[in-house]
Amino acid sequence: MALFTLLTAESVPPMSPSERLELRNRRKSQAHIVEVFSSFQGEGPHVGERHIFLRFFACNLRCRYCDTPESLTGRPPARLQKLSGEFDVQDNPLMLDEVEAAVRRLAGRPHDALSLTGGEPLLQNDFLRELLPEMQKLGLQMYLETNGTLPERLASIIDLVDIVAMDIKLPETLADGRDWFGEHAAFLEIASQKEVFAKLVLPPEPDLAEVRRAAQMIAGVSKERIPLILQPVTPFGRMTQAPSASDISASYEAARAVLRDVRVIGQTHKLIGLK
Image 1 (cartoon, rainbow, N blue to C red):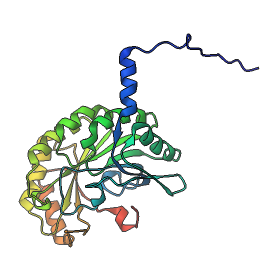
Image 2 (image 1 turned 180 degrees about the horizontal axis):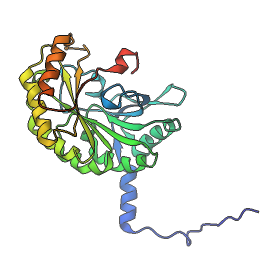
Image 3 (image 1 turned 180 degrees about the vertical axis):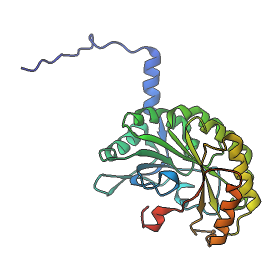
Image 4 (image 1 turned 90 degrees about the horizontal axis):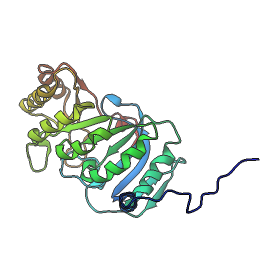
């Protein structure tokens, strides 16, 4: 006969006031989510791995080539994929427990990482701070995709991520033309505590001096250890052309003159018709 222990109110240790407050705050924690889905990583050196993608709403930048405009404005319902491939639709914002449940049900299938993407995930870093310890229990790597402009927010969660995929934004690719290289350098210093690579989206006829400056910024942190991925832009929205073969070659040479590890990797998921 199985032996069961009856837990009465007297046998359960009482929670301290701080524990009650932590539990109450945890239940209230929420985030604005675009979607949770399973697919294959299509960018960077981890291309081809199967990831669970957790896409957050909102971004502090407006890139001319942005291919996820649905993540920028408004708060439509979240799309949460099931193992069948179909999607549930749920009103935003989602509670912490709801996001955890959406990821856990996909984690029943083998995956390599939980990819935190957007938008810009670090705009909701307080939520990430609560979510990621639970997600680490699934045995997945925590993979942060970020525009690399919020170093202080990265510092608050760097202990909870395994891989940082940091974009470098050329001023010519931004709607306002702003230069973020100072923030990028500070961000990369913090990210270098973990596995990190930098990704630079190449527009047609890129400014080679800016490409070289991006490579020098990376070299200032680590010339040998941080790869630079040159990603030819996929035409979308206001970016109607891709760079030519000569644009790509010239950009590679400009960066390779500074860095040891430079690679050209396009958006492979777009090539094979995946999300």
